Length: 254
Ligand SMILES: C[S@@+](CC[C@H](N)C(=O)[O-])C[C@H]1O[C@@H](n2cnc3c(N)ncnc32)[C@H](O)[C@@H]1O
Image (cartoon, rainbow, N blue to C red):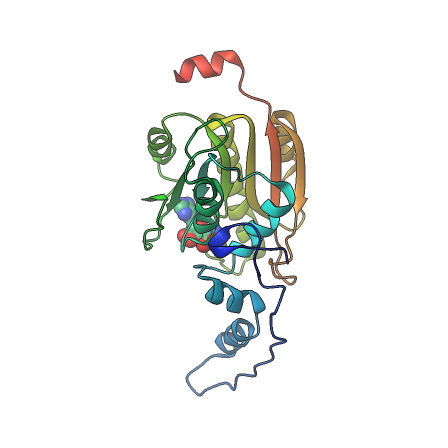
């Protein structure tokens, strides 16, 4: 685990330091199914769950973003961030702390950081972020985000995941199609040099999508942060150094 500061800032404790070796056993109550007993036991023994509570994060997922950004440095002061699938808001908290708070709001070029989060679930507001309650798969959802952005973004994040059905192939297809849609959106809105980070499943990004990302970004890698459960198929595709859109596409959008 890498460092985290006060909610999302750099430098701080995180789940790795000072985390107790936890081992809580949960008895299966009469009304509780085996799977919810397992879930509860996992929560109670998860150092990231405890660290999230201690450090004021809405989700343990916050530590995944902290860890990836500490290593690959894409959340910069003054940065404009879109966070797709943002509920309950852990990634938004980290993004706000890193693009806004550390500079009092402005980057080296005087630009002010912005965070726009989107989720179809209702969630509490995240101070410093603009939240849209919207299904990204509905027509026009991308345009709503573009309207709010009123320009380019430096980072497009997607932690979107549909509820699992238990049917492996269906779940895989659903998550990969969310990633695909987020990637196409990123290519439409990112500024040159920008970053796209999205959740995928083990086995990595589908060949076609991977080829597209490699065409548009200088580096593309798969990352499995320590905060992502080892027994989960989840991983992330991180594409950095957006090469920019061809002139004609930029003109069309203007
Ligand atoms: C793993 S959670 C995100 C956790 C978040 N990164 C955090 O740190 O709190 C995945 C989210 O994706 C959202 N999601 C899935 N499909 C979506 C869609 N089509 N449009 C908007 N949000 C979606 C879910 O509602 C869920 O809240």
